[in-house]
Length: 89
Image (cartoon, rainbow, N blue to C red; front, side, top):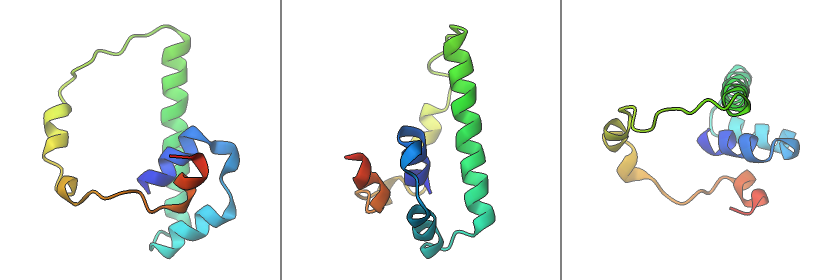
């Protein structure tokens, strides 16, 4: 899901039905995919509005220590998701 979100952010014009099928193969439902797209689109919109208006977001807003506590942090692996490969990452 996160790799799909990354690909949608970095290379939205190249999202295809194959990407959706891959998400489904990992157990995501169509409604989940719609939610993913909406969240990525909203976040992208908000960042572009902030950038366009010259709004500087404060660094170090307190989330960094929380990221270290994520339960899956030690389970991270290389990205096997096919769509990332098409972006060259």
